[in-house]
Length: 244
Image 1 (cartoon, rainbow, N blue to C red):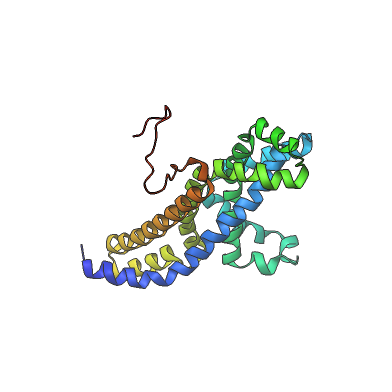
Image 2: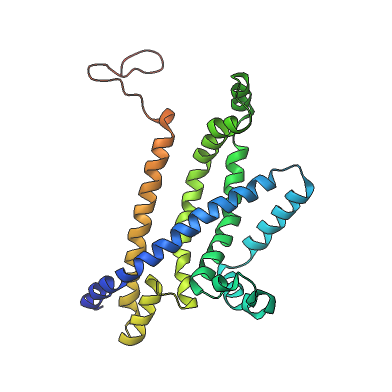
């Protein structure tokens, strides 16, 4: 394996990192926002809202991201109504087609994670908050959402990593992200293994930093799970009161 080519490819591929990060951030954030809306619809007692959200989740989760990307990029332009609408300047751009496909795909999976987080909020916490005079938006902001986010964050971190890797499919609609540049270099050097090893190293670095950031956020959101700081000169005690 040509180590020099791997090093040079790594440097060349850094030019695609901003686009990869951009697509990842938009997919993660957009998927979370849309997923939250779909999750609340799934929890609604209104039959139409529940059924619409259920069908949306089932269809999107059952559709491969590549198929969804091609449907948005190649399919929507087949309709004259779309081409003559105000959305066409956006839908004709490969960048926005990739963003739309990634957000739609992420939202279906995020909605189930968020729904699980919302369902994990115990009735005891809600009743205690209502006893303290909280209701409506305040109850949602102070009690429900913080608990739901803490519960959903570990599972959603896996979805974040999956979205970073899924951005590689954007290269199939002419976007020059890390994978797009790697494919271009491999086609000229005829050494795909070295080039894609460099690309894999970049994705590894991005996802390692992402998981570290999520872990730090999870630590910050769960102060009640941290070991007690007894301070200098104070011995930690076991539940029975005996010093360790």
